[in-house]
Image 1 (cartoon, rainbow, N blue to C red):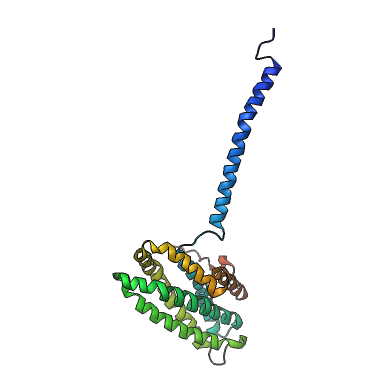
Image 2 (image 1 turned 30 degrees about the vertical axis):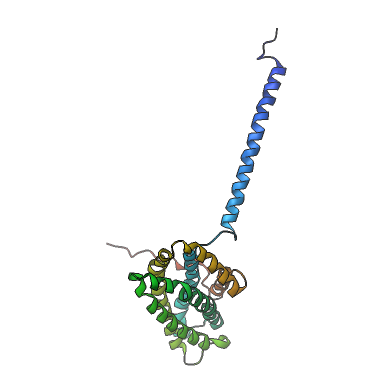
Length: 246
């Protein structure tokens, strides 16, 4: 007599039963995994909602990259070294359209600063000064655009242009740092439940202003400007090691 353990028909039936249990489990697990992947793609893609402060701060990232262009180019301009003036003109024009006309005027001065003023507290003392710095920045942008038009630096203006770019960078670095660490957190706290809704409103303003994703458009432009000026490689900004000590 053949024992059940040795009966090939029994083993075959056991195997089929096991497969019958395992396959549906695998299918369910795969479906769940794909659903999770789809959710991750939506969260990581264009459909992902961007909070208002995240939107503001990543826009600051684009503007800071323009400040780096100014800071790196200024010594070359001052020494009359060869510089791509057309790229500097594009940098100033980008700061005008993306930074001043959109980020500053429509978002900060239109929504952020009024909410911070109304909320009071320590942060409320900043908006008036920040607006004054916006105005000074626009004067400097006018000058930079004018002195680099036509793809060349105006005769006799190299030193003045270098000072304008350096001064602009110095002011805006401190300006943006205060906004990121003091003003924007106060803005979020002041809005409360309305904060999420305003993030969606910022997205609508951006698309209306630029006809699409203004951040991506600005990012492409600043990347091209960096390439034209030889500033695209992040490794070139790596600091030298500290001096040897005795």
